[in-house]
Length: 141
Image (cartoon, rainbow, N blue to C red):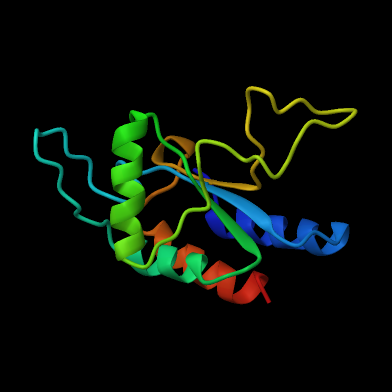
């Protein structure tokens, strides 16, 4: 089980130590933001506090939100537009062009991020969105 609060604390601590302007947060859609729906008609049933937490993260200049999903590009654009209508703004989809290769790291096939929010990473959307809001309020100041 991951501890999402510790992940944000560590990311903000490193940001301060390194003098970075922001941290990068990747966020999955299905069973993380929305309840998974594999019907012909997509539903937008947010998991508890997901919408509020993502709206909060969207307001911060020191957080770059990246939508992280295996959906087809056309579908991802529909999600991005729908989330934007709900006050949730993702800077990128499945990429982070802000962080390139260095002498020690290659990001040609792996995007750089500081915090991952995905049910497959151990994130529990039923409880962890509240912890995200609390951690950002404390560690992000």
